[in-house]
Image 1 (cartoon, helix red, strand yellow):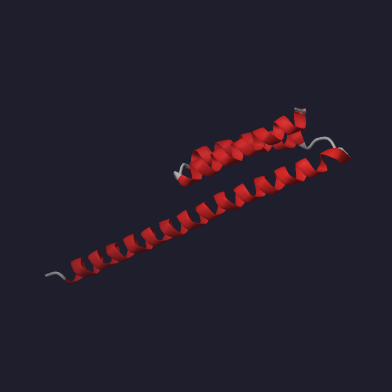
Image 2 (tube, rainbow, N blue to C red):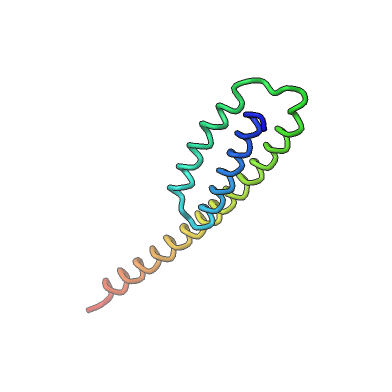
Length: 104
């Protein structure tokens, strides 16, 4: 196994772990994994890709992008959920304040 292949396998593994952590809403851990992955990506692509390695590299990049999209989608859904919870909380506080202002 070439060094680049090993790095690509590790990058995909980190991406899969990021997705698993995103599903658990462990966003701090997702960020830590992303930082580690970024370092590895920079190392992996610091040299040009040999012609014979292009198909393998392209397939790995497609897989990494797919995993990233999945993580981003989970993040977007979670953000929407939090916005809804904040909005609901604000309505509850406003209703309580209005009630207290009307109480004798």
